[in-house]
Length: 563
Image (tube, rainbow, N blue to C red):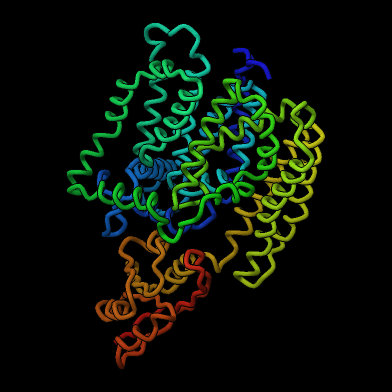
């Protein structure tokens, strides 16, 4: 592929509008009906809810405990989104606490990430590649998950890809005359504002990805003068101006505890050892890529020979410098979660789209048959396993067959087979349409129908429904013994007590008229022993599966009899 002309590097406005509509259509199914996920989403949303309730937008708390693992950015965005949504619904802020309002920043951040990914790929490889890369990002598995969860990662991706877009623009234009006056500040301002917002959302991730990209490019090209166009000294001042006011305020408020927790425990803990049982060996992300970037992961593998043959092209070199060092860092860090590699997916989508347009299956760098076979096999295994899991999970958890989940297998499988056949034959439009269609059908069926109806997965939702039916007082407080997932606090309210069996009994005794206790079977002996001769009244029984611990649960909701 030759250098891209300035005209070809632009996408028309209608293309961005179409991508935004497609992304919204892919992200919306299940957005309002899925209960809060444990544990991160529920913690973020509950802390944001408490910010709204208290009016304190500096300190971050989950109930009475400080939550100092991440900066304040996502909490501000969730609070603002919820306040705006409640105003549009014509209700007082927080009067109707629902999880979807806290997901709005993730939804919008994911759409923005799709659009900027398309812009970046268009700048690198031309408008058609940009549009295809945007389609890939909108329909890949992991971004669809993050768009529906009220936490940091979709918003973080938007800041990262904006920073990388600015960096790519400077790199590709490094031999052009330096702009004069205000024009010289446009791209640096975009980069450093994205970096500053990124710091408030999840720390220095924008600077990590862009920094490693710039370092590799400087070493590879033996040239770093173009980086002066970023105006780094002034830029760091912009980052400080954005992030420092809150960082200073929280340092004073917490007496330094925020930095001890977020840097000393959370960040360094992830680097030095696997946190929360998530320590996994290098190679984990390569092994899971076939699911996380599905249904397009096979195209990424097929693009490898194309990328290697064109590694001297500036656009390809930029993508290599974006992908490889960041990926190696993610693989080296012991703590691994599926979404951690998301910041490099826009670059993968860009080279996959460019290779597809260049007919990698017919070029002189045509992938060998073994590579085609491996790509197809891994692609089918990744996307197929995901589709089969949607059909099987209702049986494993609730011991029932979900007709929607079963119907998805042949429907999604048929569309995916058509996508494979068409893409390998060079029929791009049919292949892309079938691939996006397969993803859309799978996501709509999974998030809007199958997952919300797996009752055993949503134990907190069961508890909230039971409490709503039997609560003796409008302000009854529940003490939960043996089940302490954050979603329970979000759904039942901040006063909810997460305790052991004896403390649950003490709660009922202290608030005999209105108190409720939710007791898991393992805490039941201590609960009953602490009540002595008093026999509690069972009001409801719940059963389900805790996907964080991998254990089945059986809980009973109690109150004490009236005296």
